Length: 434
Image (tube, one colour):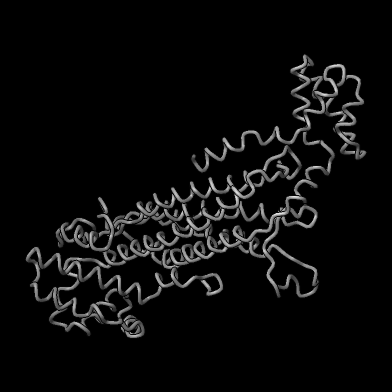
């Protein structure tokens, strides 16, 4: 990803120097295991660790690869330059390139996931704080973009919290799914390397051994991982879209924090645009873009081909770096989001009580009016509000058919906003516990 949408802690995971360091550790741990089994001399394994403080020369490895046309061989050649060709002759004993490449990739993905989980925790903390802050802040709920019934801003935040909490749970499962390693040889049969080597390397690298690999770790694991990132990105966009709608001029129930000196438009000095959440919508598309290629990587020829390789070299850093940046940006947006409770009430009252139509409908049916007739009575008064700007309660009180079933006091009671918030605490207990 471009630096504009990157954070150093995540990008460091995908730097070539980090990759080569992981390759080195895999090879060195494999040598230790081989020596313990008596396959290679102990002194050769110890000699490999002499390079533990070496800063591998990325440019030199690239120079060698330009000749060998093989990245792992180029690295092994460079490692031998540090260790000595005789001492390094048992490095990569019985292994194949994918043992290094796949195990390294999964180490990187697991480390990236740890950062993403921390990002999720940061976002969840912001959502929870704002949920309790606005637990009783009334706003209109909308369906199809149209006023429906009253809700609270706290419930909106709580809904997003619950969704992101599910995302976090999925992310933990995805980490477990991806955190496997394979040191099983050319077609995964361990013909030239003992399974104990794989067990040792995986233990040292924080992975579990892949139960059965071919020449690669099965890519259904990676498909599940990237699909999880895609779902989280979609949930992120779900929040961003809500904020963008709330910031529309004719709504203005909330808006992104606008800092001193910030400019909204090069042409119109009055503009305060939802640029951060619009950006998040775009970044979500980039993360989701990696899902289909990951799915298509599952089907490989026989024990292995490399059609997946070029894909993963792109989507692994891109998806994790983008989502890391986006989650942190969203947490900041939520933390500083400016809420306008008065505008929320004004919007709710824009159609003068119309949002209480269901309460009146239900009251009429409880009073003995058929549902069909009750719906007709409520709707004919509601349409006067839509079309003529009338007051809903006033129209109901003036409708003889309605007052024949409901007293003025009963009609008045149906316009109590508190009715719609009576179960907020129950919902909060379900979401947050307690």
